[in-house]
Length: 152
Image (cartoon, rainbow, N blue to C red; front, top):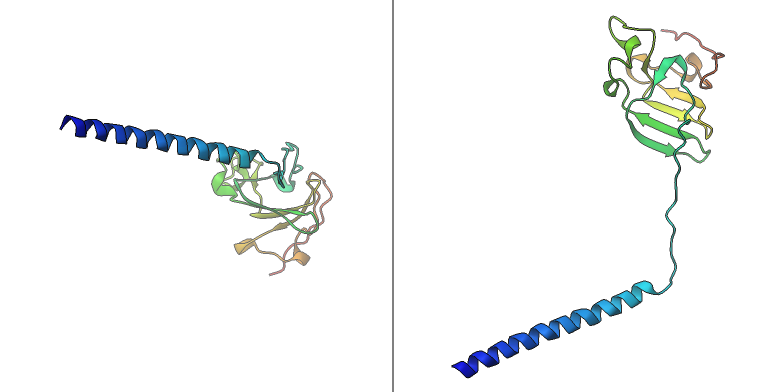
């Protein structure tokens, strides 16, 4: 019985050492393959521009941004959540009764040029307007914005 237990321990120890040697050999092989130079792709690097976009007209504020897309003309489209994500201190002009002259949520979809100038706000729902009846090309921060009142 004693002889059988000793052989069994020897076999288990040999299997354990063999497994360690096999794992070490596989690790060395994989490290060699990972270290060989090959075609590599560099991930793009982005920088934050704290002054983009430029100040919005009409005392508009952006809510939580949920989508950003750049089109083929390098115009940047932003979709944001608007008033529900702004505090009452931020959207005083929207409250009923208003608690201040400033500010209100911007329309949910905005188009900017690459310099951060607002090109076209999109409106939705009950305040929907067409390009001929709204501000079609407002530059952020400029006082000269052409407006027409919507016809009903």
